[in-house]
Figure (cartoon, rainbow, N blue to C red):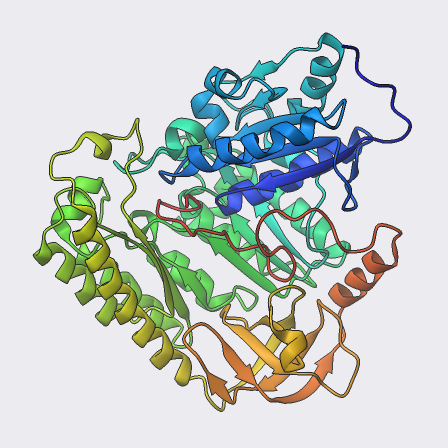
Length: 512
């Protein structure tokens, strides 16, 4: 049957699962579609639904095919509707997706985001599914159009891919080897964002502090990289310091480093660059040296705790978060106790904790010593209880402190009921605060005093002053547009700081 005649612009919706990299990729996909003439769906049934998938968790496949199944009758009732599947699961499963869900129109991978509009049109014209998967990166995502979710906080990709071989992680085989952007391109993008009103950026990579390794040997690196590493500092430390020279950029974050590449010069750059925030996400995965070895994590407990100690010495106020996997194959009770020991010693502000999830195609999936579910569950509950206790105690230390909070939109689900607003302190703690007497907009800064602490947030019932910012101006300008500030949800918070993943990383960096 021929495609129906269009009476207006085709509408789209993007549904994103997984990590920060996927969230940022979805901003690129939105930009591509809008550049091609599509508009976001306004609550009506979209003409195009794009699934940007994750392949890290064990239930990723079931979640995707369940959602595709729910869409089949919707598509049958909506002539001309198209469904596209991209991301890591598409890179992994390829033709399997169309075989299991033949009503899918387009399948594209992690290396060819830019092909989506062409594949959609080709599928419409030829009236058959289009599957296009590339084995290596076609176009660095930074060159693609972008429709950013926040007018005042942005992801900035500095690299793609990963050179590590962690035995539990499938991402390197789906994202490829690390490729780095030239520092001049990164800084130019940040400067352009700041000119548009952005005040906070998060530098993003699968293994963000390995930045520079993608250029090969220093002798063959671009001159700008050589200049950035003068004096022996790493390229990533040099990049952080360069961000400090961008006028109007108030907060710089990055996610996530790998302990093996985390050097003293990066700690110094964080401490000495005023706009690099005192916030660090440092994945632990396990506190057991034996388990770390089985995971192919090339650091050990002593090295990890040494990094935490150095960070705290340089930045006593730093909030440190982590990722932990419970029940990795072969993990004994003694191994698990070592993880609890590190948690007690490190005193993380929070931790993203996961029960080990077997992923076909990873070495860990076929290892001996797979742990029974009930044992993993019991250990997991003990770990969560300990971390909740520590998180609460660490948050109580914030009582009475005066903080400057970047006002967010969409972070406080109970704000209407409590008559509060929400935002993030510089160390990334979530703060719910009393509405100031002055008018305040998302993107503005409010100075508050912390009056209550819970394990996962702070409350400030005293607000002192509002600092109106260009970021607030940018939010206000977006509100004035006909489309408003609302857009298609990415399945996770999207305004304020760049959206946190629905499931946080358990890999070297941005893998959930």
